[in-house]
Image (cartoon, rainbow, N blue to C red; front, side, top):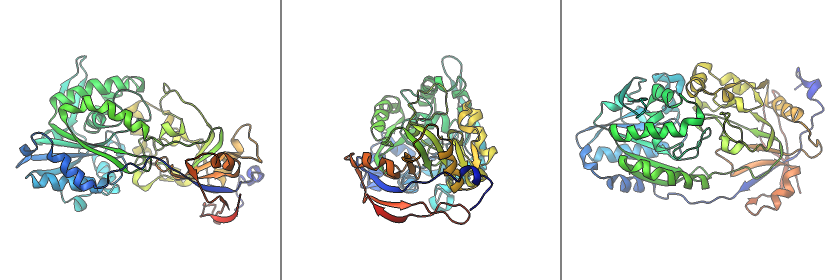
Amino acid sequence: MMGIYDNILSSVQLPRMYRVFQVFDRECVKDITGTIRKEISQVPGIERIGGKQVALAVGSRGISNLPKIVKTVIDVLSEYGASIFIVPAMGSHGGAVAYNQKIILEHLGISEDSMGVPIRATMETDCIGYTQDGVPVYFDHNANNADFTISIARIKPHCSFRGKYESGMVKMSVIGLGKQKGADYCHMKGMANMGVNLEKIGRVHMERSNLLFCLGLMENAYDRTCMIRAFPREDILSAEPALLEKAKTFLPRIPFGNLDLLIVDEIGKNITGTGMDCNIIQRFTSEHMIARPFIKRLVILDLTEESDGNASGIGLADIACRRAFEKMSMSKTYPNGLTARTTLGFKIPIIMDNDFDTIRAGIKTAPDVDYKNLRIVRIKNTLRLDEMEISEALVQEAKNMKHISSDWHGSLWRFGADGTLMGREEETNV
């Protein structure tokens, strides 16, 4: 695996790694289909959809059980006699191109064949009103021309701003159904004002749009559905702030401080809007967010296929593998930054040719480290913190944590001839 940088990186020694497991709250919905049916049946006036055109708004996030949830909603609405079509509700994602947004849904398992209904993708919007200070409020043209719109939204802390409403039901209307134009107006005063803008534009959506209800979802730290509730339009603004606070309690974390290196196997828009959850890595795409840094160097190895070339968040890494960089589409990535008026998450990190060089470069560039006791954590992505690999220097700390378990068998790093990181090779225990 001799490469161009080998003379510089040859002194870097990789420590043994140990697979550990974190235990989180396991609360989850046991009967997803039955819960959805019950929730929709309790929506006031649900019988009004009989014989009507209903637009079902589905976003670009990698929501757990999403195909099952969307298909169940379609089946239930059809039983009430509605004629349903899906609209991609995802702001400027997919390069703000309608066809690309349809492809993103297909990557998430939402296609016309699998759902049995049309997908009508457009970037065209209608102005449905104005805020008190004159900001125009936009709504997906196809959804606006339906008799009713129903949305599906996961409620969680946002990666780039704070407010009463962050990622969730209000944002799905304002940004998702507002499309690129609506997202652009909401971001007009920067991330520091996003919470305020989201609320005031959201109020117009709740007063003037044809939204009937939103199916609100929440997930636990294992990325499993732990709440499904249908909120009528008139209840969304009052209900969501408390749900956001509840969602914060499910946010997992990396339980170690002062890390020399964090290795993230993959980033992607299907994982979170910024590729990696900023709340977890404590690196943010907006300058006004207060970070509590605990990582000296962060490297990424790959970009998910579901992200469809959108590498938003790649700039949060110090070093990236060429494999991730070559999957990046500038035309699908930069519209997010241009719309959100942020640049930090879209800068290009140092690009190394393979996993081997990427990881060694991360160690080499980390300042003030004890090379005999390297503090390294490797995760699949920021949705999967129930399992991770830690270096030998972290083992004793992990053993002292009641929520951490392991067989404490160390493993050697294994790389293919091309420098690609391979599976574990068990060596010994501690």
